[in-house]
Amino acid sequence: MWIYEKKLQYPVKVCKCNPMLAKFLIEQYGGADGELAAALRYLNQRYTIPDKVAGLLTDIGTEEFAHLEMIATMVYKLTKDATPDQMKACGLGAHYADHDKALYYHNAAGAPFTITYVTAKGDPITDLYEDIAAEEKARATYQWLINLSDDPDVNDTLRFLREREIIHAQRFKEAVEILKEEKDKKVYF
Image 1 (spheres, rainbow, N blue to C red):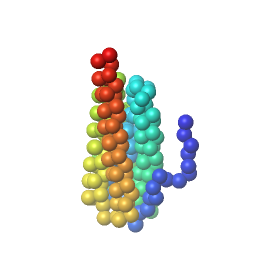
Image 2: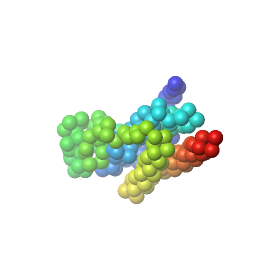
Image 3: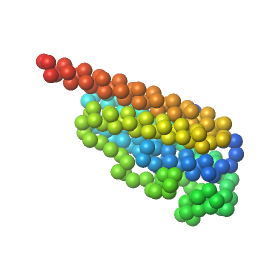
Image 4: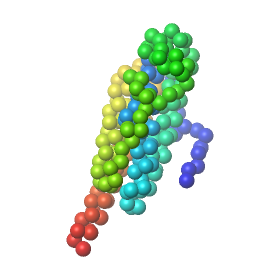
């Protein structure tokens, strides 16, 4: 199903150790609108969506795992040289106490990832509208992360991820139109 290339989809660089920025980025790692939730949502929904657009969910779901890897790399690079005092000062003291600097699926506020983030209704058009909303929420979050960051290297990667969310939303919108056309054809015949 997949061929894994041992390289990131887009280069990830950071200027300096910045655990506060890492704390914010964790939102896209284990938050409700983050990359893990999106990947699981799309790869799950593809089983109940018409074959005509199922491949799209596989493609985007797979790409979301690549984005998850990019977020993980940024968080790791931003925290690898942080002291326990720096982790504590930026609000990651509880994370450090439980996980040291290991990545853990939670949001920026520290709430653990929950499978309730992964939605599927079973109605293809409803699910695709949910997917469009998920991509738009992720796009907005990336913009807010850019607004919070003073690291030009991190911002470069965040801009790439933000643009991918826009493209994903556009592709999901196209899929809705394809399914609506198919539905209309069946009504008239």
